[in-house]
Image (cartoon, rainbow, N blue to C red; front, side, top):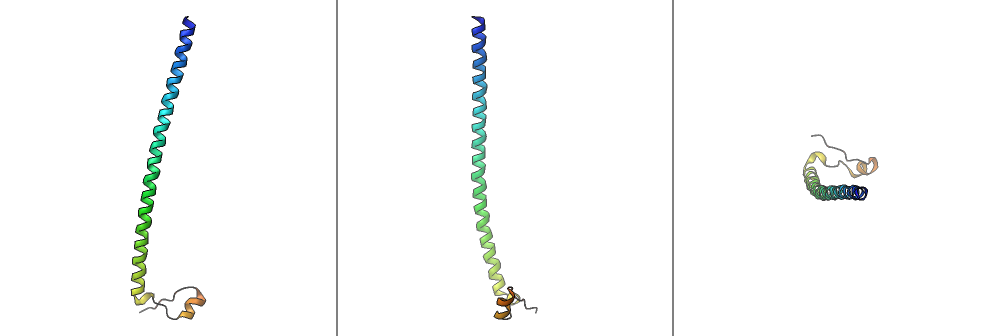
Length: 86
């Protein structure tokens, strides 16, 4: 009976170790999932801030004489906006 008891003990220890590993992996997965959600939220926040800043810069440029086009043909034919130097 001692051999059977030892074999059962080894099997129980293996099951215990396996369960612990599985629980650790589940916690790791939960942590990673939470991190993904946090990164997605931060990304959306930064995209929104970039849009606001882009619009702000566009408004500043349109209000400034420095960034006005000199003529529409130059803009269309050369593919860039000519800058007026005051």
